[in-house]
Length: 615
Image 1: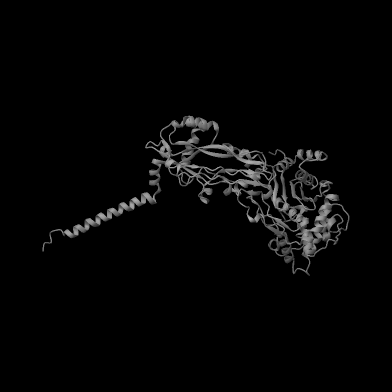
Image 2: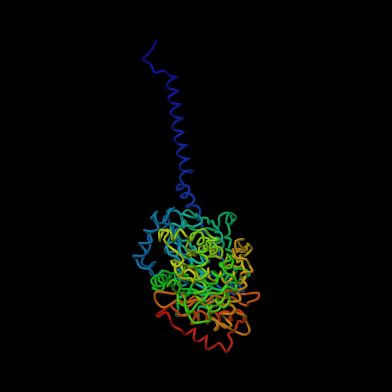
């Protein structure tokens, strides 16, 4: 036996195993490079192809009458593929783009920072400068051969026919990393709706991106379309929107609210469509467009009067005496009072030394004149009777919660679900709220201010306008909304479904009669016009400074076409600003023209200055 010689079979086995191991390593490496690691594929593809994103035209917007509101203008982004750049005159490029060298260096650094720009690759196009103007675009096109790796991409930017409805329309801005993380549709340099309709209907407005695949030679020069464009995908434009807003009415409301803080909302009761939504102070939406966006935004965000805040849906206010209508409905529904039930006033609710006071009117009085004259005492007595009724409720707590549930049923205390972001819910307290604050040691006098829309009660202008709409409809409302139609897409059924309150229709009759009496001979006499049967309710909401002027109403009394709410901060009595502005807005919508007899009133409201140094 020869043990000194190497076994041929063993040597053959070792060679075979070694060869197999090497082959496996190569296969694994190739699989990793070509399948698992996208950089290799991107590099290979980038040598032969250039994929350009084709951006869709964003959907445009019209008002309810077909008037164009928001459209698109051509814009251009400067793109860069860093792997294709070669030494070039950076000062010359900065001169063309009207940027300085510090900005140039910062853009390079930010683009390559994967924390700021997830998914960055030097082989793929990156946005270097957005929204070039026509001058910069023209200059670059003349000299683009000097800047290898840079090219322009056609985009669009928003433009506006009217300087109105900024809070409704909203604005678009460049996506941030949170937007990109939430939706893989977006990449750095894309734009997204940030507020208003631009935000809430973003997925309808944005459309779908396309792609263009271009063929390149070995030096990276474009030689034409790959496969004659057969692999290209055309972008799909965004859907157009028809709004419920009447732009002429909207502009008129903004003019009346100039130099004032507050809001006007008008709703069509039969549909829930918002006819106008004024938040004052407002701004021209065109200042948040293009490369001057940052400057315009800084001016608005630093303004102490907060013009970016949509007070119509996000302003939280005491509803004041407009809330008496809601309380009257609860008292009737619960059988606490009948329309004929009378209470004594004598200039104020003074039982057990309590307040609030009241202005002069006949006493005692029943429900209808109490609504017409906005009697504080009547609704305080009704509230007290309800909370102390031990034949119907076991405790204050039970009575309070029944009251609260009726208010929620009328649209208070929770968001209504308007198709705009930023809506607030307001506040309708329940028994637990008072138990927590007063350790169960509370009674009707502790909470009596709720009877007249003060105390802990608060609401948004939208909610109070919705109350007017539900009264006009005698017991139901539609979720308020600002979009009337989406091209080829039906509205969500939430906006076409009736929401019934907890109040029987018969109980609305005396409230409506009282609101009509307020206009014909009560606190809303300024709103009276012989041609339109307006129903209204004033409010003077208490405030640490000057009180707020408030008006709620609808018209005509039979077959109502419009519900309205006006809130003028620090305007004083409801009849000082709320009622006159409400009258003018109703006339504008129903008659389209302000009669000559109202011109003095119109000029007085337009020229009144409550907010100093407003935008």
